[in-house]
Structure formats: structure tokens, C-alpha cells
Length: 476
Image: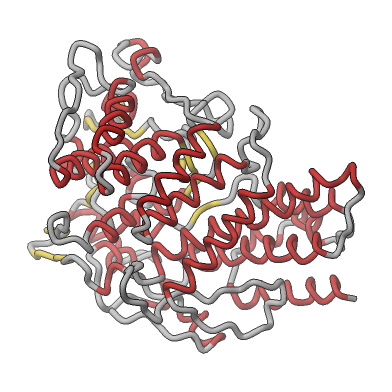
């Protein structure tokens, strides 16, 4: 009866979150059967997180990695996704009826439901000695998935974490599979504390090495990476560096861009990385992708629609192989020349998982902030040695903390382009005046600005959630 109640609840979930019809496809019925074994709950996780889409669409459209043309801006006014006009200029008044089309909130909570269901189910099973590793993997994975998706949600719908001041605008923390429960918003501090609890449990339970053929399942290194990211936002830099240490001790390999034909004209049109869930990319710790819908502009970069932000492209200097690895030229049917992004660790999709290059950058930043300048330089130089042609590579020797941090932030922007991390980096860096910046759009003869620490760095919660759950809306 207990599990039947869960699936009755799932029916309510579909109504509450307004999922699209693909959630109801016939093959999905496999995951709606009443599970009762460890293998059943592992199958639920494998099926529903294979791989999961992460909640990054709003932040990707609101950040400064690409720009929409005036022509495309005008076209959007007559389309059903016209709310993207509001998102693009950080409007205080977003068309909330159309905004319901955005899947970030609803889909993330569907994933959280599956994680909660697996946790509730696995706790009811007493594993035999030979089943302990499989039991641990289910429980550890479910804790990881819940933390991972709450983390992504927090970067869009919760206010930024402030170390010395809590804020009531955190997330509703659903920790049980009963979706009929009315869960109110938690504070920002409580939201991050829950992420930490889940990620810590996953790190204790997950295996030290996942199979080389499957990075859709997280391992201990991925859990350590997630813990490092959470602590980074909490300004706990010593702890973030230690978790990055633990992650990189297990999986620390980098791809040398000098060895993958970055400057070979015969390979300029090839996607740099295979669409194989990270199997052939040693940097991938956990494989996930952003919803391609986030790139309504990015997926349509051609004449009169959108283009990469010129200020971003200008950052790649001579000998920086990332420019060739990440971008390729294209000429369309009317001889219009433009660039195409080809550097995702998901090939045709947009990688938004966890990778070792981010961990080196994170550890470098944390060591710089805590006075360990030598270690910070070791990491940034190791990364750049694998990204810059030998004829142009020079060791970074900067010892001034502020200047070194600015250099690390610059490398984060160039290295992790289109991974969905730019928005969260802006949010946390804006808390420090020396690193803060104002985003500017100029379109249709009008100038739009998003100053540091503006409430509009946190997106509205869908009205369907506000109406159904009496959850308080974010101020703008």
C-alpha cells in the first residue's frame, strides 16, 4: 500500500508540475511499476537519469555568452516563447503565462521525486551481505541526484548564498516522495545545508571508481566535486579545496588539447568530443546535459538570429587552442559566415555535468583565496599547459591575490563556456565589489542593464507552483 500511495501521488505530481506529454510516453510505464528490489530502484535511477537535463535555461539566456540580434528580438514578440524577450533583458515584468513553458523548475522537481522515491524504497530493504554494494550505490546515487538538482535549482530560483546573512528565499525542500505534501520555502542557508547533507551521504556510499563505460552513474569523485562546488558558493574555501583534492586524487586527468588536432584544417569541422556519455573523455566525472531548449538562440545562431558575444570571443588569445576546439566556421546558403559551437563534452548537446578541468580551476581559486599562492599557480599552469600551444605558453607567476583571482575567473569563463556555469559565477563574484560587473544589452535602440546583486539575478518561480503550493514568489 505504501508504494501504491507513491504512484497515486505521482499522478498529482504530473498535474502540479505541468510536465509535457513526453513524460507520459508508453515506455515510461516501465518506471511506474511497483518496485520492490534493489535492482528495481537502480533501474528507476538509471532510466530517469540517463542522463538528466539540468536546470540552466534561464541563466544561460540571461548571461553574457551570446547576443540576440534586433531582427530576432522583433520576431520573438509574435511567437509563443515571447517570454524569452523578457528573460533576455532581465525584465521586472515577465509574461508569466508564457513563462510556464520553461521546464527548469518542473523537470528538476520530477527528478527530485524519483530520487526521493528511490531513497524511501531502498530504506525499506535490508540487504544481504552480497547486496550491500548494490544497495549503497542506489542510496548514494539518489542522494547525489537530489543534491545535484537542488544545486542547479538554487542557482536560478534561490537568492545567492551570503555567508554572514541568511535569506528566506531558498527552495521548497521536498525530501519525501509524497507530492501531495504542501512544502514551503526554506531559507537559503537551509537549502545549502540540505545539499551538503545529501552530497556528503553520497560521497560516503558511492564507489571510488565508476565503470569507464558509464558516467551517467555518479561515483565518489563526482560526489566530491559536487561538495567542492557547494562549499565554494558558501565561501568555505578551505573545505572546497579539500574536496577538490579528494576528487582529483581519484580522477585528475586532463585532455591535452595539443594532441587532438586543434589546429588541423582537416579537423576544423569535427566535433571535438564524442557523444558517448563521457566514455572517451577522461575529464568527465559525471555526465549530464542542459536542455537544448535553453539555447533557443544558441541552437539557432545564423543570420539575423543570434551570435556569440564578441567580447567572449576576444578573450581567446594567440595560441589558445580552446578557440579552435570550441568553435568552427560555417557558411550558410546565402554566404553568411558565422561560428558554430562544437566544444561541448556532450558533442551535439550541451554538457552541464562535472569535469576535472572545473575542479582544477576551483581548487586554484580556493587556494589563492586562502593564501596558498604556490598551489594556486600549480593548478592554473597545469590547466593552461594542456590548453595553450607550446609556442605561446608561458607560466603564470602572478602573486597578487586579487590579480590572480581575476585571471582565474577569466580562465573559468573561457574554459567552461556554454556549460551553464556563467550565471552562477556572476552571482557569486558580484558579492565582492572588486570582481562585480554590470551586464548590458543594447537592442532595439534601448539600453538594458543588470547591476551587481540585483534581485533579478534570481528568476521568478512559475505561477503554477505559486498557485498550487502557496509558495512565496521571488521579488524582482
